[in-house]
Amino acid sequence: MKKIFFVIIILLFNIGSVFAGNSLRKGTCGALELIIPIGSRSTAMGGSVVADTRGTEAIYWNPAGVANTEGTEVIFSYLNYIADIKYSFIGITTNLGNFGSLGFNTRVMNIGEIIVTTEESPDGTGEIITPNFIVVGFTYSRQMTDRVFFGSSMSVIHERIMQETARGVAFDFGFQYIPGVGGLKLGVVMKNIGPKIRFAGSDLDKNIRLPEDNPQAANRTVRLELASFEIPSYLQFGSSYDFKFDENKSFILSASFRNNNFSSNEFSGGGEFNYKNKFMLRMGYSSSSEREYIYGLNFGLGLSFDFGGSVLTFDYSNGQTKYFDNNQWFTFKLKF
Image (tube, rainbow, N blue to C red):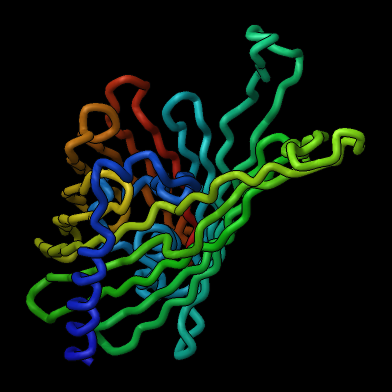
């Protein structure tokens, strides 16, 4: 199994070279709701948790971590994103023993109301639209050996703007590996692999006479075909180390490298101090050549309460931005 795992790692490194983007590809993909981060624990640590993420929050960061927990966990996470965009995540995972673990999640991005303008009515036509961006995902994860975890997710994408809709699918594949060297963990995830997506709808119908038509012929309805777009795929590698001070206190240090297909590469690192699994203090930092606007220092905390076998956790994180108010994540977890 170790040999298989390392062969997969080598293959993923080669795929990463294919994925390597350049400046000409920036801004050319769509369905960007797929890469808006979720979960207060992970974001507080700068998104560096690919090797350490676990439970329902792992659905987004590395589906292999879904198997790295017991019982059932339900999460609701809310993000007050840049430019007043609201992003909500609801997920549930459950461990089914030898079969593995299953997960389900829904992500909704709300950008609010938009006033419709035209060349003739630059101040607005009186019409207001509310675009819809929804992602529904399914996850399967399994502990392959005592040291190797594997997970895969499928996300169904639905976008609607006025009468135009776009639908597509995206797949994630992830591994986590415990080498057995102290508290070291390794992880790799390949995200948002899928076909191109195209918008289509009745607003693109035009009643015209084509140049090749008979001048006496009546107009006919034709539909304009929009260009298709790719989804924001990326490859991420990470590691973490768990320092156990005693039975009550521990500290996790994590780091990761993310090779983006449509933007600059990212580096991130973070840490989490854990006291009795009841109080967690976190900090992280992410960096990129584009760091001047959405990358920087993150921090957060978590509080857990045990209610006779069920654990309720509240997590909060704050992410630095330059031109907008800081991002804020609020997350509630119930594990039973």
